[in-house]
Length: 222
Image 1: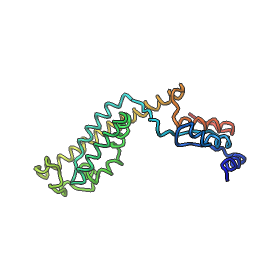
Image 2: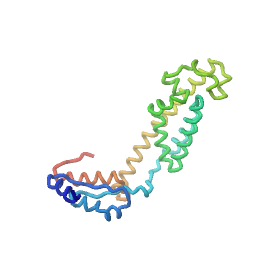
Image 3: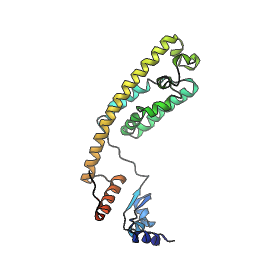
Image 4: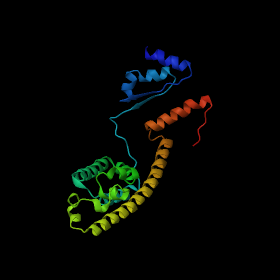
């Protein structure tokens, strides 16, 4: 069935049809995505993957990045898998900061979460011992970093516990700063939207939903 007929049938039943085209705005118009929205009494949007997303810099970013570097020092690679995973961890950090500080701040917030620690327990001594999945005395000396191999079992346990506590302190500080950062970014996004200086897909859709729902008697609380 031609899309105009399908959309018209939906519109006749009171269903508003919005369309989202993945690509340049004008291309979506040329390929009838705008026509589809118009037939359904809705709005047309596009997601242009070729346009770089603008990240909002926040005053907390630099400190979060510094703490992220400290956080990385608390990871102790275990075995060959650990060595590979630790290099991958640092590479992913490098990839994120190459886009923006904001990207790495978001990644640091995730690394401060319990979810990340649970994943890291498969290759990181500190995460494994902290979660209880491994006991310090069960670790094989040959799988540990060279600087730990010469330690006595008690020294090794003390060193691991010190890193567990250090990591927790750093994660708590990152979490606090990340919460402050989210509030700051949300405020800036709200100010930009009110001023009409930016139009992200999500704000455009929300605005559209509000305008379409109002005639039907819906009210939205801020």
